[in-house]
Figure 1 (cartoon, rainbow, N blue to C red):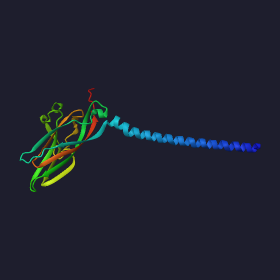
Figure 2 (figure 1 turned 30 degrees about the horizontal axis):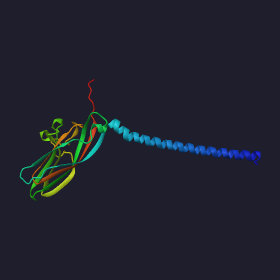
Figure 3 (figure 1 turned 90 degrees about the horizontal axis):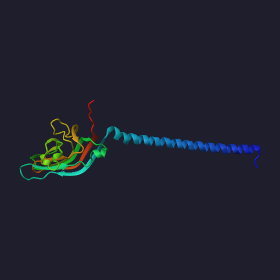
Figure 4 (figure 1 turned 180 degrees about the horizontal axis):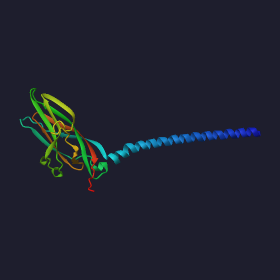
Length: 213
């Protein structure tokens, strides 16, 4: 049996060990809480702020829009209707616009060495009435344009800034292209020329409401 002094020492050691374990557990809990708070803060900043403050997101669609090939002297014109796969519902808003739009496009020319050909792609002005008849649309803005000489090809990202008179992309925020609409796509190429659209990339943003105070 322990004497009085031994008992006191034994109880003191047990109490110290227990307190040390409690301190270790408390430190582990504090560290875990800090890590959780850091993770939550990152989540809120990256996801919640992106949706609630910017109200924008970027999307891309794999798509195939192709011109017709012509051996004749006249150009070939082909029309498509684009129904964006992603729209205002993708942002959880009722009203949005397409802020930017790019096409991954392949141009191919099989003319003679001394021949030069061109091809271009245009988007119609916003008008839902032409969804079933894209050839009836008004086409003022270019999305892609390229000229090639001889047997050659080129693939790249285009937005039309190398063809539009204002040297800007065919679709920008100020042009007010609704995100819940459809658009005619016009592909025009010279003879011996082919244009293929492989992918569409676009940015949707909530449309700011204008109120009169």
